[in-house]
Image (cartoon, rainbow, N blue to C red):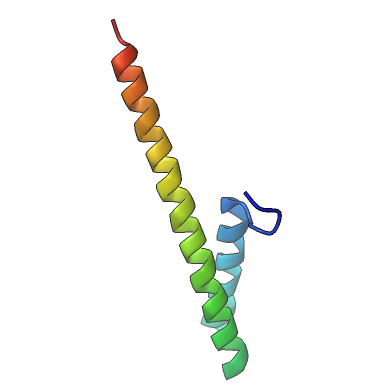
Length: 69
């Protein structure tokens, strides 16, 4: 993980804050577009991390299954 890449929890928290701000409707158009774009980046990062975690879990499950006597 790079130094600038947020953890899953950090990305999720920031994404939730963006959604709240957009739902309140208190931002101007330019800021709303910027927030939307950032939200898309965070969403993609979260999905990528979840997919990677699922892959690891499936691999561990396969290892555990093959290790059974």
